[in-house]
Amino acid sequence: MTKRIFITATNTDIGKTYTTKLLLCEFASRGLRVGVIKPIETGVVDGQAPDGSELLESVKALNSEFENISLSDVVPITYELPAAPFISSNNTKLDFKLLDKAVEKLEKLCDVLIIEGAGGLYVPIDEDTMMVDLIQHFNAHALLVTHCSLGCINDTLLSKKVLEDKNIKHLVAFNCRENDESFSSVSEPYFLKTEFDVLKVSENIDTICDVLYNL
Image (cartoon, rainbow, N blue to C red):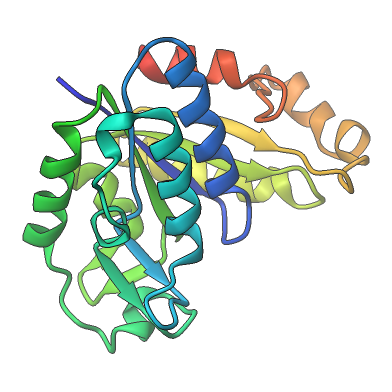
C-alpha cells in the first residue's frame, strides 16, 4: 500500500516545495519509488504551474515510471489568481472525485506519494472545505513545515494544535534560511526547554523521513 504524506506549512512561502523535493530525494535514495502531487495550485498563468513544474521535474529524475506523467497529472486543479483557492475559483465547489482519480493514477507508480498542499492549514478551498480537510480526506500523515524567524513559536504551536485537534498524525520540521541566524537565541530556547523535538529540514531530512514513514 502506498504511503501518503501531506506537506503543509504555517503559511505560504515557508518552504513546502523545497522540503518536498528533499523528501523525494531521500526516500528515493532508500530504494523506494517516489511520487508527488500538488492537488491545487494558484497563480498559474498560461498553464505554467511553477511549483508543480519543479516537482514534476524532480520526480521524473527519481522515478522512471513517471516518464509519461504530465503537469496536469501532478497539478490537477489550477487557478490564475495568486490567492486562496476560495477566491481564485470564485468559490467553486472542490471536485474531490477529480483529486481521487489523480491520486489513484499516481499511486500505481510509487511506494511513497508526497502530497503538497497550498498555503497553510486554514486556507479556504471552497465554502465547506479548508486545506486541512484534504489531509483527512486522503487519510494521510502530515509534515508541518514551519519557519525559524521571529514569530515561529506562535505560528508553529497554533498549526500544531489544529493537527492535534483533528487527530492527524504529524511531524514538525523547521525550515531555517540563511537570514534566520536569530533562531538559536530568540525562538529555539523555548522549544528546547519544552522538550519540543527541533528537526531542521536542511540538516535532519533523514530523520524526518524515518519518522514520517513510520508514523
